[in-house]
Image (cartoon, rainbow, N blue to C red; front, side, top):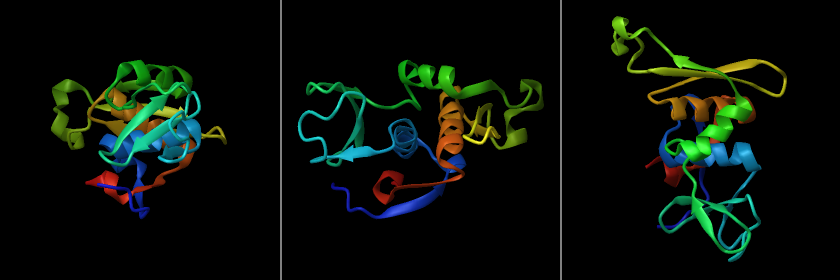
Length: 150
């Protein structure tokens, strides 16, 4: 597998998995590095895509890295929540049934650069948080590598 460079526009509200994590990385750092960018020692705090297996990595600048997945790891999503999220709540009362909103369980609200509130939804608190951060920082439509949508 390798990244072929074709980008696809996707609604932030539809992002999930590694495509959502890619978009969060872009919102956080402004750019995801793809080898050979950054060579073997990408800058501290940068995020790289391994285009062999489409995993994302948070770099420490010294050759070590940790898996980047804020949509599934509280250790990475928590700081995003603290920095960006105004509110995080259950989207519907449990007694109404989750089916009432198509299975969506949580909502998160963040402010964009103009101070407008952007609300996003997700099956988990982390997904809702990540989608809200992406929409607030990058907009409702986001470009992601087509390979990340498979």
